[in-house]
Length: 121
Image 1: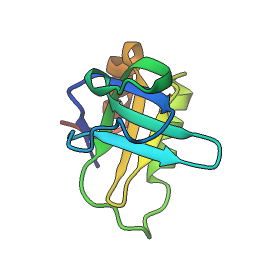
Image 2: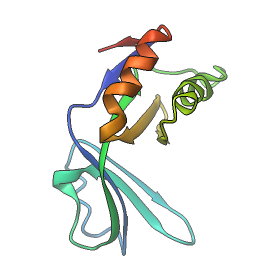
Image 3: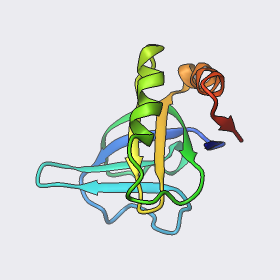
Image 4: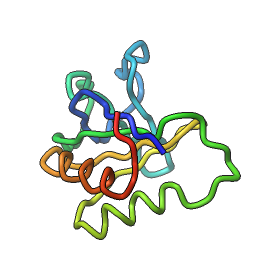
């Protein structure tokens, strides 16, 4: 399985509303529940109406379109990282999964995943 590095810093934050999220940007995730609106975006694109933020994340995605019948892909990756004391923040799209780790753990995360047989691009 191939993992694709994202070549930019990411921020995980909460926003007060969605009106200041620039939907023309090429990378962001928005999650809204009855309790909060969460946003993951490039650090350079954090909107002004952010109420709390956590900078210093890097990420990678599982390459290709994952069929919904596939089981355990995210579990295996997160297990390898957990066994190496690397925390994650995971986001899923219709096509695939994205795994974020703190920037200081990014190189080590890629190393242990490569050692476990994942191709890193």
